[in-house]
Image 1 (cartoon, rainbow, N blue to C red):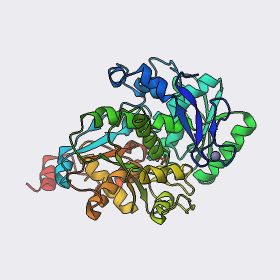
Image 2: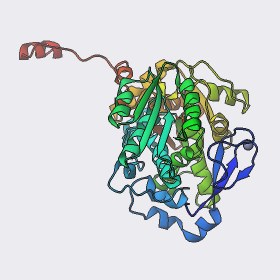
Image 3: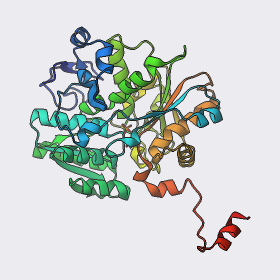
Image 4: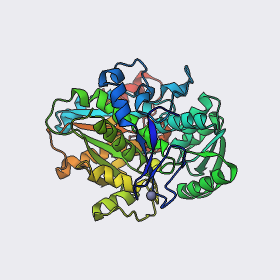
Length: 415
Ligand SMILES: *Cc1c(COP(=O)(O)O)cnc(C)c1O
Ligand SMILES: [Zn+2]
C-alpha cells in the first residue's frame, strides 16, 4: 500500500472508507469517491523543494502525492506519461490581447492524449492489488491509453469502444494488443456493459467516473501547472484554466490536484477553472447554468467524439470544479470547435476536436468578458490532432494539386 493513501470519502454523502473497504463507488449511494491522503504525514516528510527537485520527468515525480507506490516499469512508456510541455504562444497571446497565455499540450503523451495520466496510475494500482486483467469502456482515448500503458508492462487489457470511434483510435487499441470489443451502440452503452463484465469476470475496471484512481492520475496535470506556471506566476489575478469536459473527470481530477496542494499549504491562490463543452453534449454545463448539481442526461451528438457523453459519470464533481473556484462553464458550437483547431496549428500545436474545444472556450470567454486582458490564462489541449484527421481536414483548405513543372507552379503562385 502506498504510504500516504489513507482511504476514500464519498463526494455525495461524505461517508469515509478505509483503503481496502471499497473498490469503485460509494456502496451507500453510488457517489464518486475522492481519494484521501495523509496530508499531515506528507507535510512532515516533504517540502516543496523535495518534490520539484526530483529528476523524474514524468508524472511519477509526484509519487509522494499519489495513492499508489512506485509501479516499476523503468524504460517503458508507462514511465513517460505526464510532464507534458507548457507552451507560451506569444503570437496567439498578442492576437487575443492577453498578457500571459500558456497552452499545455497533453497530446504529447505516450499514446497522444491526456488519458495516459489516468491509465498509468490505474495500471499501477492493478499491479498492486494483483488484478490480472484491466478493462475499460472508452470513446477511444481512455482505451488507447489503458491498452498502451498495460502493453508497456505486459499487462492484459480488454477495451470496449463504440464501433463509431475514429479509426486512428481503434488502430491504437489493436496495435497495443488489447482484446478489443466494438459495441454496436454509444459510449454510454459500452460503459454499462463494461461494469457488468468486470463484475462477472473479476476484471479491474478503469471506467471514468467509476474508478477513483483515474482522477488521481489526472490531478498530476494540476501539479505540473503548479510547478511550471503557478510557482513563478507574477500576477495578482488567479490563473484561469480552460478544460474540455465530457464525463467531467479531467476537470474534477485537476481540481483535486489543486485542492491537495492547498491542503498541504503549498498553493497560495486557487486557479479559476472553466469547463468547456460542446452545445451538442452539454449535460454538465446545463447543470451549472441551472445552479444545480443534478445532472440531466442529454442526447450527445458532437463531432468532438472524446467529449460526446449522454450521462457524464463525474458530473457532480465537475460542476463543483467551477463553482468552488470562482470559475464557470461555457458551451461552444461544433463549428467553433473545428475553427479553433486552426489557430493552435499555426503555432505548431495539433489538437483533436475535444482539445480544441478548450481554445474555442477561451475565444468565447474573451467575447463575453469572462476573461480580460490582465488575466493569466492556461488552455489545456487534451489530445493530438492525429487522432482524428477527418475532423482536422475540415479546419483547413485542401492543398492544390499541380503538374510537376515550373510553369504550373508559377501559374499557381501567380508570378
Ligand atoms: C476524455 C477526453 C476529454 C474529456 O475528459 P472527461 O474526463 O471525459 O471530461 C477531453 N479531451 C480528450 C482528448 C479526451 O480524451
Ligand atoms: Zn455516498
